[in-house]
Length: 284
Image 1 (spheres, one colour):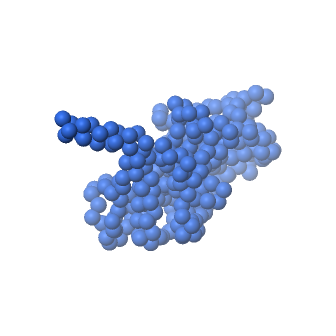
Image 2 (cartoon, rainbow, N blue to C red; image 1 turned 60 degrees about the horizontal axis):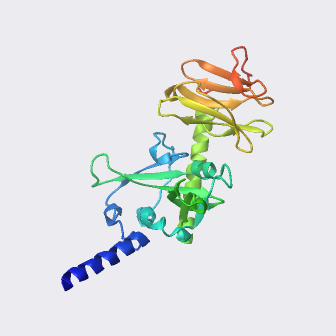
Image 3 (cartoon, helix red, strand yellow; image 1 turned 90 degrees about the vertical axis):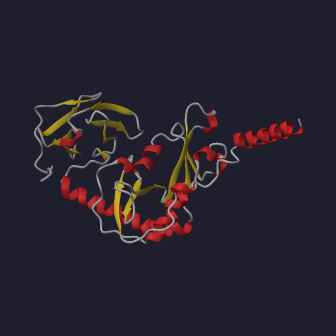
C-alpha cells in the first residue's frame, strides 16, 4: 500500500514537470557533433527554405571546423518542446499580423551551411541554418500557430552569442556577395530574387511549387498581393526582369524564350504583342 502511494506520487510529480516543460531541455546528444575528422566538403544555400534547395552557392569561403561544431551544437540544444512553454526565453518574436512582410524578410535571409566529412555514413551530412534580422544573426526555433493563445502566435528565434556573431557575420556576408555575383553573371538583367518596379510601387518574386511550376507573385510595397501566374516549369525558368520605366515584367525561359506580362490596371496578364527592350540582357 505504501509502495503504491509512493509510485503514484512519483508519477504525479513527473507528470507535472513534464507538463511544465521541465524535462524538455534534456540535451539531444544523439544529434550533436563531438568532433570532425579529416577534410570537410562544405556547401552553402541561400533563401527561402535554403536547407531544401538544390542550388548551391559557388564560393571559396572557408571556416574552422571547431567553429562549425560549436554553431551546430548550440542550435541542437534549443528544443521547441521546451521553448513552447518558455517563450520568454526566446530572443526574437515575429508576428506577421503586426508586421506584414517581416517573416518573409527574415525567411529570405536564410543561409544553410551543410558539411560532409570523412567517417560519415553515405548520403549523411550535418547542416545548420542561420537567419539575419536587423544585422543580427539568429536560429529559428519555434512556430506558434493559430491554435496557440492569441498573444503567443508568431515565429520565434534565438540570437547567436556575440562571439559567434563576430565570427560568422563576415563569412556569411562573403557567401551572399559570391551568390549575388554568380547570379548576375548567369542571369544577365534577370534575377530569381525579389525585384521592384522602377518606382518601387510593386515587387515581383518567384517560388517553386510542389507541382514543379514557378509561381510569380506581384505585390504592392505594403505587401498586398495583386497578381499571380505560373509561366513555366522550374527546370526551364531563367529569371524575371522589369522594364526600366513601366510595369512590364519579363520572364526568361529555356523552352519558350521571353514572355511578357503587362499591367492592365488591376492585375498582370500575358502580353503576346510586347517587344523586349534591347537593354534587357538575357541569360547566355
